[in-house]
Image (cartoon, rainbow, N blue to C red; front, side, top):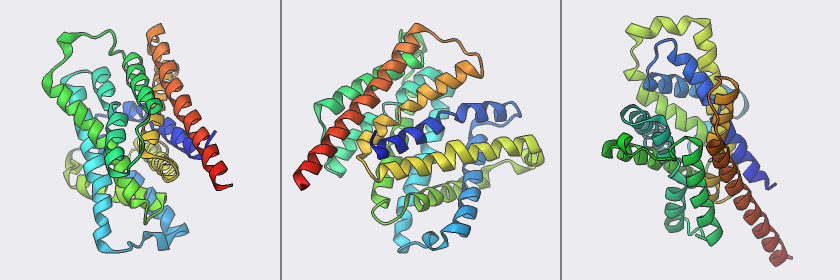
Length: 301
């Protein structure tokens, strides 16, 4: 398999583990946005410490106006995406919110066509269609219950997809000048500086000295956040943003498997079919990318 595709799939798979940490933190009384704050804050601390020891020079900005890339990834993407997603979950349902979130690959493909001149092939279009259909099956949106749909839920769901998609777009610009590690670090530093002032330290600050909560917060900031975004962005540097977004839909597959194995959530034939659709789309994109690499090699030779 193409190494770039492997990095993207691993990063997305790590995102799929987030539910385990989040559910445990919810049990201690944290709200969704408070969990987001813990997530970005612990990730920022871990990344800054790591870079201070191993790559201090990479912390230096090439020029001050470049901060716009990280305002994009940190605020317009990470914070906006999480806010819209959690709001969509609150006013509609988790399956609907998740299905709308994974219209992001279509948004990335359209934006990448205009911004980066990436091709919009029949294979890519077919992969997008079966990805969206597969996601709807996995999260239980199909068969559809019209009564649980609302205009505001749909708008917030599509907003989360836009925010999710914009991470790939802003990162693609930033990768011209910065490493994946630098981009990920500044993304979470910006998100932390934006969210921490709104965290209710007076009411819930005492919880942050609980070793169990710190362990969940550390795990949330490390594996499905810092590590996942570094690996994903590293892979993004070596492939098209539109292909990366399709490959990243392996996340709900991993999340579903975790839900079944750890939380004993029900699993149906429809969900299994959806998972096969998503995996099929990943294989289709990977196979197409492999053929294009061979073609480029022949042309160079």
